[in-house]
Length: 238
Ligand SMILES: NC(=O)c1ccc[n+]([C@@H]2O[C@H](COP(=O)([O-])OP(=O)(O)OC[C@H]3O[C@@H](n4cnc5c(N)ncnc54)[C@H](OP(=O)(O)O)[C@@H]3O)[C@@H](O)[C@H]2O)c1
Image (cartoon, rainbow, N blue to C red; front, side):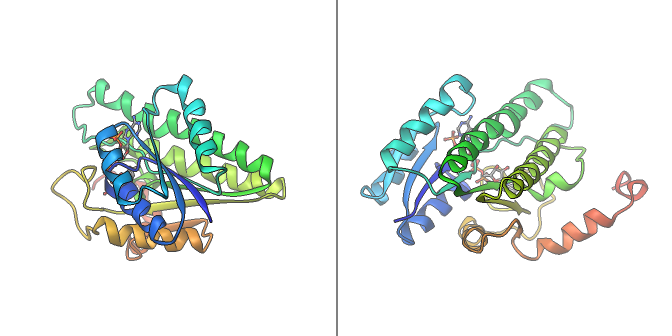
């Protein structure tokens, strides 16, 4: 039986993905801060879900918590980082910018390093992170969010290169959604909004296929292509 940890399983994409993993007979360690939602989710599949509520920003405890979950599962094959924070911040309130960096950069970094070291020891494993198409370019209404997602994308590329250099069977999968109908999707300029279940299915398939990068849903490949091609002088006028 495959064993996975989903960090950020209490709602949205992480919750939909957790339910899908259970459907495919994974044993899953589920985390998030909202203990009540974790308990509800555990009820869906008490045999296969192991819950541990914690805040990833409690940096001193994160590795301890992940070790505890891994022990309960009896090992880990797949680590998924779904936790994320994203606020529209047109006025650059610093108290909105900094928590984004805490969860999307510092905690992300700590969790994936924990996973990489586990997988380095066992010489195989898979790390999957829900980054975002927002990481491809800067963003005026959520600069910290876009920059944090760029950090994740770049960091994952570094880990992929490292695993290759070390000749380890560690797969690094970078999942880049456009808009998904969750609490995170804010603002009135949304389009092509996918339901979390549809996004989770495409994410699951990309993980199973050991993809390096995948846009979620598939049509966001077009936007990614446009974003990457658009010259700076045009982009800054958008
Ligand atoms: N929805 C979209 O349109 C969209 C688009 C592109 C990328 N994404 C990315 O997808 C990922 C999942 O987001 P979502 O859309 O599913 O939104 P969501 O429903 O708000 O899920 C966010 C998850 O992150 C967890 N989380 C946040 N802060 C945490 C903390 N300090 N400690 C532990 N867990 C924490 C939340 O759990 P607790 O609150 O229980 O702690 C929750 O499970 C995020 O990384 C987001 O950037 C979303």
